[in-house]
Structures are given as structure tokens and as C-alpha cells.
Length: 97
Image (cartoon, rainbow, N blue to C red; front, top):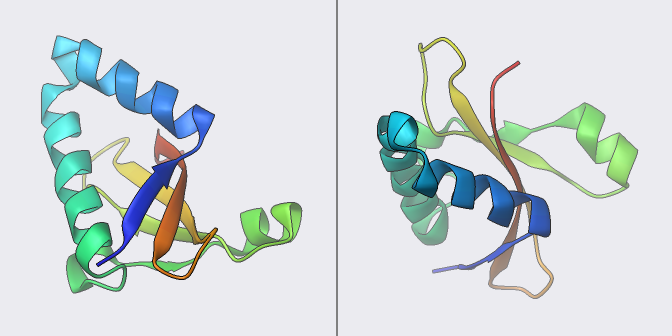
């Protein structure tokens, strides 16, 4: 099991999801994906893969996990391992561009 840490950006994005009644369905999908990330970042339904452009920009390995799929503007969760061995840092939670 991993402990999830949220960047300031991701924390604000979660607040927006939680406080906007129009995003209730999206919030449910994001929470489900976060639960899977906690248990197994490689869970099949997350379609986790390395996100190369962000990895190169930040100088660390950044991964993308799907909160939604086959949905216009489907939400994605960008995360990295650390800062310690059993922790993940959620960098951003955003609709797919």
C-alpha cells in the first residue's frame, strides 16, 4: 500500500472537484482511481504509463493514470514515486487535453 501526497496544484484541483456539483461524476472517478493508485499503481484499469514530456521537463519519472476513459475531456492523474519508498506524489489531476 502506498501513501498519497498531493502537490499544492493537485490539492487545489481536488478542492475544485469536491466543491463543484457539476463535477460529481468526475470526482467519483478520480477518487476510485486514487484508491487503485494507493493499492497498486500498475492496476490494469489505470492504464498507467510513463509521461515522457513531463518527465523530461521536471527531471523525474512522471506517470499518467486514467481516472476516466473513452470520455470527452477524460480526467488524468499525473504522479511520481516518492519522496519515500512507499509514497506517491500526485502532481496534477486534469482533463485530458
